[in-house]
Image (cartoon, rainbow, N blue to C red; front, side, top):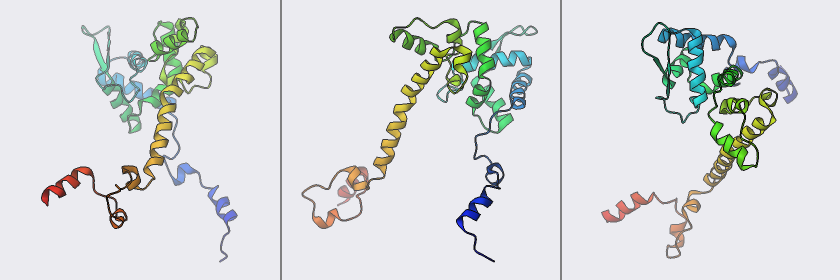
Amino acid sequence: MTTPNYSNIVENANKLPVAQISPGTKKELISEDQIVAFIRNLANTHGISDAEAFVAISLLFLKGACNSSAPRQMSVDIIVSDSPNPINITKYDIEYSCHQVTGNTYLRRFAEAMSKEISLYAQKEKLTGDLAIRLNNLAISKGGAPLSSVELAWASSFCQNRVDLSQLAGERIATLLAEDFQKRFGNKKAKKESKAKENLAPRQWRQGKPKASESTEKSKQAPTAPAASAKKTKKGK
């Protein structure tokens, strides 16, 4: 048997779909069937119609429920014709429905998959996205006019990755969303990378150089224990 060369290995590897050899490596897109299952699960759980469930999900996403920092208690009240009292739907409720369909609670994937329909509903009802106030202030600070009702309806964090956003809602809102994203996450990414480089340095140099009074032999030893443990050792002496 001949030993395969690198080209043969790569050629054979290209015959293996990544979904087959390592499931879950690629981020799977939410399908329309999954969206329907998501909506219907919420509807069945709370005894409301599919349309009412869509509205509840839309309102929660427009409030920012798909953001990881949003509390699970975030809620909206839905009034249904055959109930004397409004039905309260929380972020936790839609997380549960999400988990029933996908096995996880990544709400943003549903919000992004439903972003066009949610934003068109918001546009019709004169509703605003979760970033509306911030983007409106940003537009005014740049010397522009306040955002229009259409722009406000699309001013949501889950719309930031839409490649057709400028066609759907205008170039200005697409630019403002991109700029806001860079301000919020660009600096965080830079700090994270800087911290990662710092953590690669030897521990003793992160903690500071050895004091001049310490012996040369001591400075060559392994990094010292954390400060709290060091104090405890001295006390024991």
